Image 1 (spheres, rainbow, N blue to C red):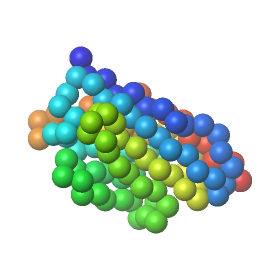
Image 2 (image 1 turned 45 degrees about the vertical axis):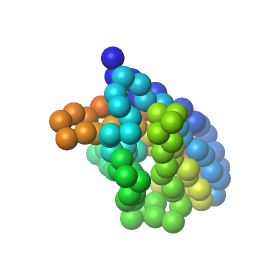
Image 3 (image 1 turned 60 degrees about the horizontal axis):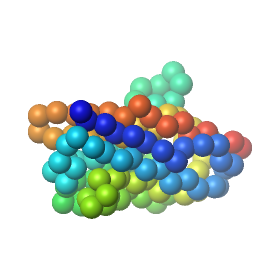
Image 4 (image 1 turned 180 degrees about the vertical axis):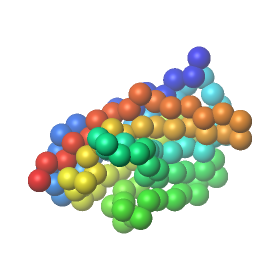
Length: 115
């Protein structure tokens, strides 16, 4: 059974920081591209950051320079370090694991940034 379990969300003031974690089980973690997505109320789910099995990263323009995605293959974990948070970053953040054939999702963790 594949499981992606996010943690680290919460309430933070603007300009604050949070670190999200996603622990993955049931798949060969190192073979998968990992991503963090977010969905704000009334909006579509969007890609925030991704990291390939080889460690290449990409970011949404809105978070470049503020967020950093990383992975620890020994711990089957992907992280999202979020700095200089803005109220516009408020959303449910989802972890995603993707191979050529399948995609898996976590249940999400709420991030709320107060002004």
